Figure 1 (cartoon, rainbow, N blue to C red):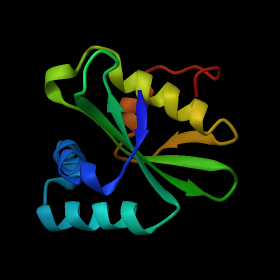
Figure 2 (figure 1 turned 135 degrees about the horizontal axis):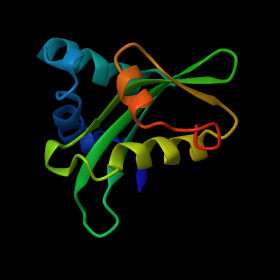
Figure 3 (figure 1 turned 90 degrees about the vertical axis):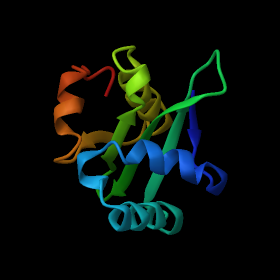
Length: 122
């Protein structure tokens, strides 16, 4: 289940985002979190497993001109990988932003392409 980020989830979100190769540096990670908290065009969502209270994934988008939602970050806790959570997050994100075209950035493109979402999904 996709839930919108709020400040009380900051440590969990930072922990998940730190798995992204471009977010290893603490100062960079703090700046990223500040952007999600202050810029309305940047939206961060967390994935909560239906059967548990655990937050196991994170996905962030930047809303751009031309009805584009560019995926800036996507990461799943390593303990929960290979379960389809990443693909489920992208599908839920698409449903939430049904009026927008979901596109990856350079850091999320490989994962996005690996999900093999067809036009009906993304």
